Image 1 (tube, rainbow, N blue to C red):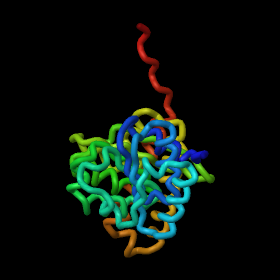
Image 2 (tube, rainbow, N blue to C red; image 1 turned 60 degrees about the horizontal axis):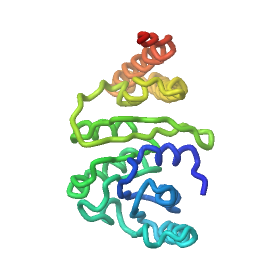
Image 3 (spheres, rainbow, N blue to C red; image 1 turned 60 degrees about the vertical axis):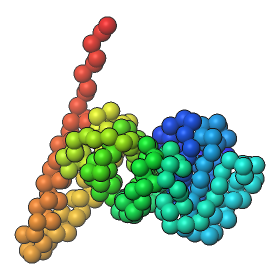
Length: 239
């Protein structure tokens, strides 16, 4: 079973040896791969769609994993009991929906020390919620699959200072470690914001709005980060 770059990067963030819950797990490829590799002893795959659950059960039967992986149909984290999963993966959903799922199940989250999240959009909203709710983003990665860039976030229980708005949009960890795809990531964000600013600039009313001012301010900050990420990094001191 071959995971694409998006799912492979997501799987790589799941701590070894933890019981896994993959919410919105679709065909259960990620859970099946981690269990077959010995990275996860057990897993729960949850999905709201009956068709997705049927596909997941087929994958699990084919790979002879029915004793290790349980498929449950249900909404978000409602398929889990508190303390059942040590690592929760939510991939392939919008950031706002991921926030809604997380916020709706505090008891389940209390027993899960690690979250691995892959938002399709709304990364800033998701990061802001994590920092505001005692989750520390300890690592992030970018992956390219099917001609698109994807953000993957690993969060653990803990407190950390909220980054500024620009870093919430691109990922403070991604910027700090200068991910190989960082420039492309920032350029995509600035291109989208530039289009939005140009659209608002065509309207006198929109040009005077707070949204326009925030968009221009964010665009300026991202362009600054883009220049900084192009600059050569100082070499570490020799031992």
